[in-house]
Length: 437
Length: 168
Image (cartoon, rainbow over all chains, first blue to last red; front, side, top):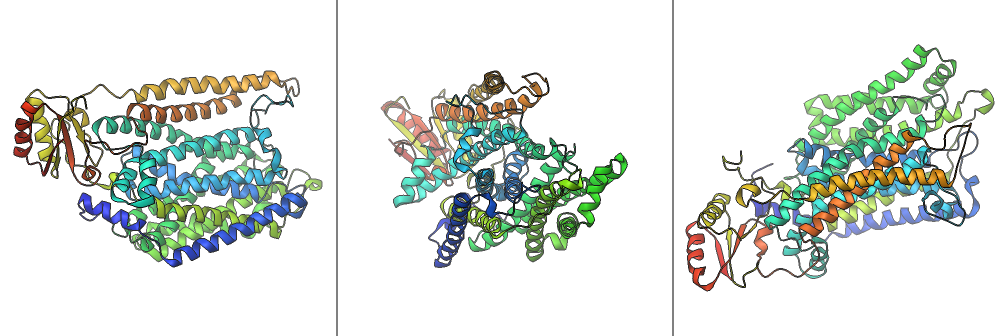
């Protein structure tokens, strides 16, 4: 980061919260329109029934569950950047982690809607909650679907708490610099923070504690999501590699989404001096690592199908690579493994058009990965009698696109209300005295 | 701040702030409050205190959360038996997933509750002994004092390079 005084850092970040332009409101209106269309479509699906979707026997689990896994995955970068890199004291995290955390909260909220949309009879969703009831029914906690409910809820709550805890000192700075309704808003949420040493002492201990809790949580959540599939006996789902494969994939897509969002955002909010190209290049560097991990997982799957000698696995593997869904599979391989490896070249890693293009394609590839994981095993079970193809209908497409609108709408509103770059943490710490070192 | 009177000083340079705190301590004063716009590594050095008890709450509530997670699963299983293929009603391994999530959830909520209580974080009007520059670029020290010692403290803080001094 260029040499900033503390005051300049405050000013630089707070100017991004100044009154937005008309174009900003136009974008919000378009997103709200898209969301509204999605809500109407959902209403239509609820009134008419799940028959309006392309879901049927044997493919009954996509694309709503595809979207669920995709958005949960997007939500993984926030906790990685804020918790894990915090514990490792990675300096460049400070410029990007707040944006990633904000993204996480809206991505997980978006994801959490999809199991409800997928239910069909959404009005009975509360049957998933464990409480004494007149039906004398209790949820079965041996089911991975129940693990999902608990894991995603926990992840959402901890992500919100972590985001909010990090925001408190910055909200106090905003409170002190604002007027009118913003001052009242920030004063309420700053919780009387004045930066005294008692507050800092307890705050730092709590922040560290939350980071320690969030780190295993981020690993566990997508592992639990992967077990939705891996606990089934279906070829293509019943694989022990699924948990690490899903976690790496989640981080891969989350990092790509952070890059995709930050490139236009740093320009629009005039934060180029704080969110530098080197920060984006560092994210791209992590993308190389995750691309290699999921590349390994992609290679292991067909290898194990061949090596195990299992006829069903071999048949499924061939179906995935050469069947009717093969184009998605190969596009996925190119987008998720081959393209991110271009980041190995410094010139690509430090070029904004390349970064934006590749990160967008990674997101396309990661959505396709989830689509392939969901559709192909269901479409190609053990017996020919249990096989069938799936074609999405306009209802699923509209609801899926609306979920993107919801995510972007929430994120764009948040970036104009709260600092998207941490204020306190971006101020360089004074050199500690020799006694402390 | 127990005393009604106080001297509040702001320092732009951290070195001056640290020197002022060291001199205050050398004169025997310990009941002062420090302010900083950043999280300092040297809080314990500048103002020695017992370690924050927040982490104890995190740990204990984590254990309680794990126990509650297992209890929830066990209770559900016994209240609504789903015996399939003669398998036992209780299955520890899947319940560990729920127990783990309950551990993290309970511990995180309690950690935040603990910091809210200990750091006294709740919406309230701006305190009397405070300056908005403490969230921008100044390190602050507030020293409670009587009328007799006020002049000495002001002189000390000025000598150490305070950029602003307010007598409250």
